[in-house]
Length: 185
Image 1 (cartoon, rainbow, N blue to C red):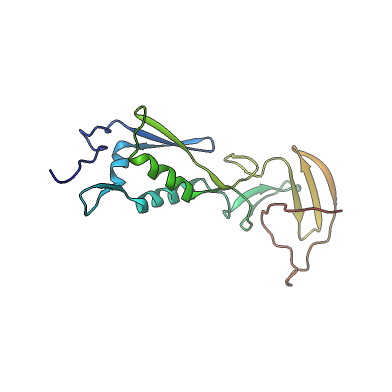
Image 2 (cartoon, rainbow, N blue to C red):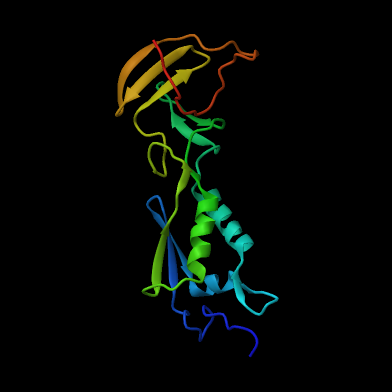
């Protein structure tokens, strides 16, 4: 036989393997059938990982678990729930690192029939919760009311007036959720 059999297919030596992907408190399961689909036969009659298929999978996980750049609901200090659509804050899966981890596992010898890879993040939020990733320590700015509130561990520490950038100019303060990069008196 000139072609190598796919070890993940039924009857193969790795047909019982399961690869787990741990993602910030959640776990995805990759069956041997899925892993078999990520091995392709080369012109040289060998098996090679299909990096494009694994990249598509990693992108689907990013779509499911990333919060960066996605709309989020926020309960304001006025008690009003609003949707914030802009900003650079949130969790972002390091897709390239995850692809490399999975590709390295595909043709490697495991000690048992199960193995786990742990996803890495290219950017992190404060917490990994389904309701919010902002956490309980943050600054809230009301652009229309020119007010600012500082919360630490869920407790209001400061409530004061503020002056934000002028709307309609290059100095306008953008709406949305952003990381705090610096502060000064």
